[in-house]
Amino acid sequence: MSQTVKDHSVTALERMLLRRRTQLDRLTRRREFLQRQIEKVERQIGQIGGRNGTTHHVRRKVRRRPRNSRPLTEVVVDVLKKNKTGLPLSQLSAKILATGYKSHSGDFKNVVYQCLYNNRKTIVHDDKAGVYKLL
Image 1: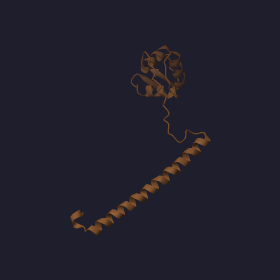
Image 2 (image 1 turned 180 degrees about the vertical axis):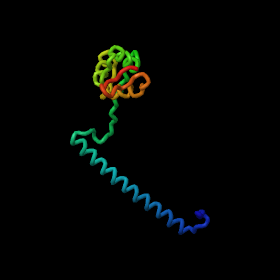
Image 3 (image 1 turned 30 degrees about the horizontal axis):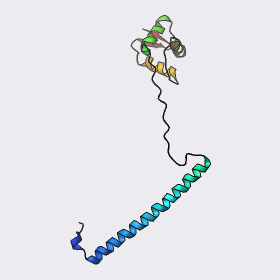
Image 4 (image 1 turned 120 degrees about the vertical axis):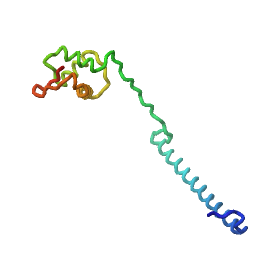
C-alpha cells in the first residue's frame, strides 16, 4: 500500500523530488534530440522531392454502384427464355451485358455464376451440355 506524505521525512521527500526532476530533465533532453532527428529526416525527404515529411491523405475515389432498372435475376431469366437450348456461362454473361445491364465488376462472369447458383429453383445446369437452362 502506498504511503502518504505524512509518513515520509523531509529528506526522503526531497530525494523523491530530485529523482523526479532528474527523470523529467532526461526525458526533455531525449524529446529535443528526437525532434532534431525528425526535422533532419523531413529535410532529407524535402530534398528528394517528397512532401517535406507531412502526411497527406489520398482521397479515395468513390465509385457509385450502377443502378439498373431490373435486378440481375430478372435479366438472366429473360435471356434464358429467349434461348431455350440454354447458354454456357461465358455466353450468358456476354448476352446480359449486351442487354445494357451495367456492372463495374472485374469478373462479371463470377457475379452471374453467383446469381445462377443462388437461383437453383428456377435455373438448372445441364452438366452434359455445359449450359444453364430454365426449369
